[in-house]
Image (cartoon, rainbow, N blue to C red; front, side):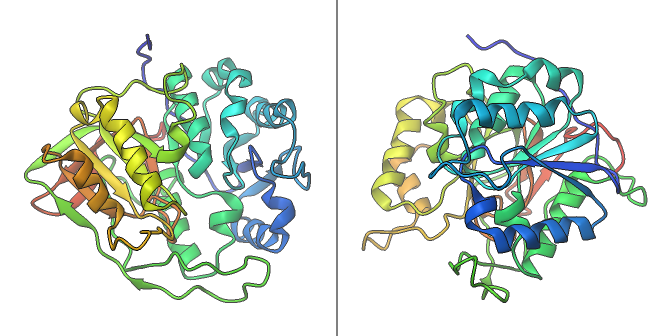
Length: 347
């Protein structure tokens, strides 16, 4: 039985604050060293100090270090009062191994921004479930901020809008998401990339009527299977808005994952689904996209859906606060945050 915890909010970042980065799974600081250096230079140019986690430059084949070493790296940043944001360098496959060893009490005493995506879903959801701290499905250091302009600048703009103090803007909330005009999931080898990726025109699909409001919960669909049924998976509640996205999967995997949610009764509880773009989806010759598969699994069940949302593996990436209240206006084709998502009341 999950206990209901009151929401906990980290303060916004200020220019000069320290962002700590960590490697909870894949060792991107090693296998993508050029992109890593570019990412550090980018965030430094925005006025932030950076603190390297203890596994920076370390590699244990598919992971950055042992389970204990990775948990220790994260806890060191959690316990450091100078670190105001903790950002993953990339995802991977094994972040869920850290969940029993995180210092949740330290985070309750000193709430700070925890941000990442993909495999880091396990940590974002687990921390929220254990503490009530609103976490952020958003850019990772190497994967996101190592991209070239203008895509990296668009990703940073969402990061700044949601998480960085901007005293000249006083309205708070709501926050209205703006659809990026272009996007890409083009694959280019990170160590040989020298220019921006080609882009294509963007589109969000709004399949529903009226307005739907609820708590946003979710993240990477494949990763959630590694915490399902555990105390680190927040209980899906009646009326929640479910964020789902994935990458590099094929139609069989996606059908299985959606069918798992249906079998668990998730679609009977949520009020809407925000379906992120699927990076380099393999339709296995079917011509079907993830939205088509989801609609087949729903089998006529009424479900408002926003498809193609840019809080996912593609570029640019929008930041989504997990645990915050949001509204989808299907008549106006708008997505907004209409409840608190951060402690500082200026945006």
